[in-house]
Length: 172
Image (tube, rainbow, N blue to C red):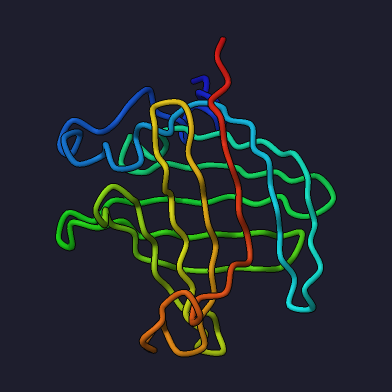
């Protein structure tokens, strides 16, 4: 009896959202496809790194999750797994960058016209990652840190910008 060989691509990738939650997958589902980005990274010492990168989003795990890969050559190469949780009506966000050995876990939801992901680093520092200025073919992504979780009166002074990406959809 012959054994069927299944590839990772066959078991990981999905053609679209799972039918049992397709109506709730749109928060990130519009991102499916390939994107190019202009990136500015802000270091703790005030220095900046600018570059061009790419992002690819796709349906995975039977259409119950979205996986993306973000590449900024010479700076990072990581992946996000975005899993919708019907009980929370929110998304679990798992970022992994084996190049930098940087890993985070966040919870993502819509906040007004934006998509906002909140989490904490191992040392308790709050992180906030936001998709903003969203159109069908472009978005701005901001990565921010706060040692006081943005609790002071002037929010602009409590969140420190680490990353600012402007992404555009690639068309076939």
